Image (cartoon, rainbow, N blue to C red; front, side, top):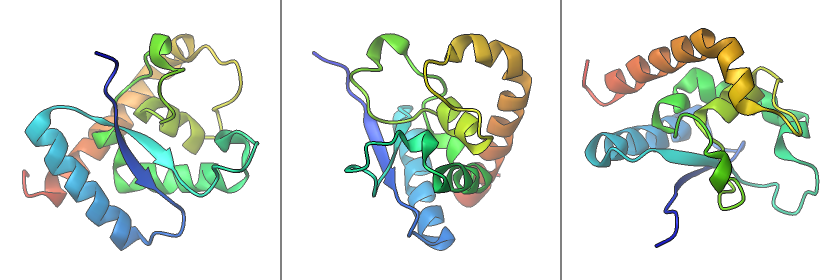
Length: 136
């Protein structure tokens, strides 16, 4: 059986309230199944430019990070499965939110360099999502 990946689809036109409702649903699902998502940002399927290079995307990525989306996403990419997946992991979203995602990056080497900052932001996201669904 092939790799099974769950996706959470978002787009910039969603309001914060709509994104929070989506995040609550995903949080409950991850708590229940212990299977995180990968993030797909819609609206750019026909654009040949990579998402991270589109001017509006880092700002949208920061909005998603601030809302708590790191909590429901798979933490880091499986480089062996990258050709299978079209979604972003928490680490890729986090890097994009800081304008640090780019072509031909050694994501695992970069993670070593900024692991404590990433882990801190993931913990903050986890706290936000736990509160959203009444776990704290």
